[in-house]
Image 1 (cartoon, rainbow, N blue to C red):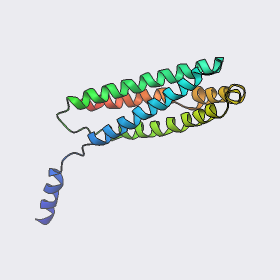
Image 2 (image 1 turned 60 degrees about the vertical axis):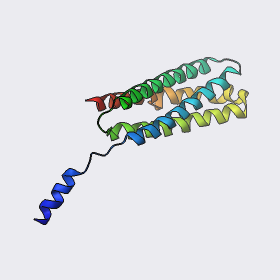
Image 3 (image 1 turned 180 degrees about the vertical axis):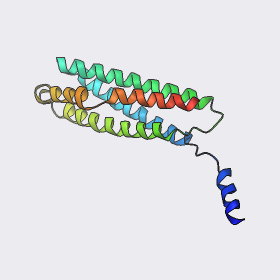
Length: 152
């Protein structure tokens, strides 16, 4: 009898609603977007190189990807009648934001240190890292699909 009651209590517990956590991560996402924008502004104040153009293009795509994520998330939250519970997408967004913030932080630090250093020693390796080692754009697509799957 005791185990039946505990089973019924467990079944009555509400589904974990992660809406507040999604909102918190959305705020952090906006901060990461601002940091990407800071890097673009710093790039605009120096002599243009081919690598800079490629990095800037990549950053613009990332900002657009983040905007799509935030757009879909907020549209989903405004019409939500049930708890938002997709933990996979939330954890993926958290991980992506932390990785992007770290990588962009290194670039901003280098840009604030010395433009000549960045042009001669840093940009090529940085773009190679973005294009070959990191999967930021693909990760954004995955997260967007995870958010869209919340609406089923």
